[in-house]
Length: 245
Image 1 (cartoon, rainbow, N blue to C red):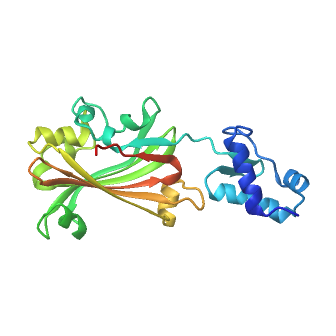
Image 2: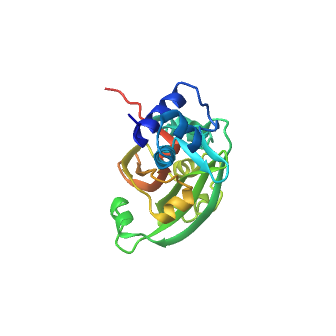
Image 3: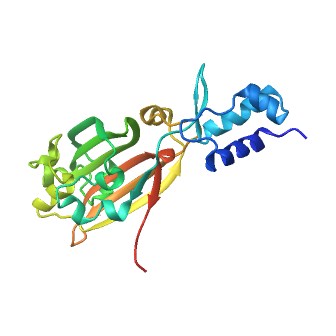
């Protein structure tokens, strides 16, 4: 009985997982799948499209379909937000990527009126102002995350947080220097499909969702001093949370 596109895709995925096709390897094309599985060309093409839609493979027009090479980033929230990380002058990103090259693109830093939801989270007055830090992160040259941070302008306006280069240790070390050291964090996560603009900015593969994370940083007395809305390419990340009982 002829295989369905789903069955062929699952078989190819299994062959990828057991190492028959490694990262960057070219997968069998439509003619080979038609011959090997005894299916129509449309079914063979559908199987390859399924793998592309699921982020397993990438299509290169005129060349073929290849196993995706990008190595997922292990985002360990506990490790990256540890005081030992940023207090030593390290970027929290170094906990995620190690020696892999990371760059920041489209960095914008400006003062604006706090959006209503931001004012609510930061416990600010309705017309309060915030310093906004918007940027896009690339790892190995691939866009993987967009992030926008909001901080009370009255607190950070005169600090390096209001400048493009916030200095060693980044925003959290600067907050500590201002007497507003973050000691507690909360993160709310949800998965959703990206908008067309988000797909373009992160070069998200068709059918791949993004992970939206909203993190709030609090001082020892429970005062919120930063809220950060992050959009992650779900195909580029594995998320880890480590905590005690």
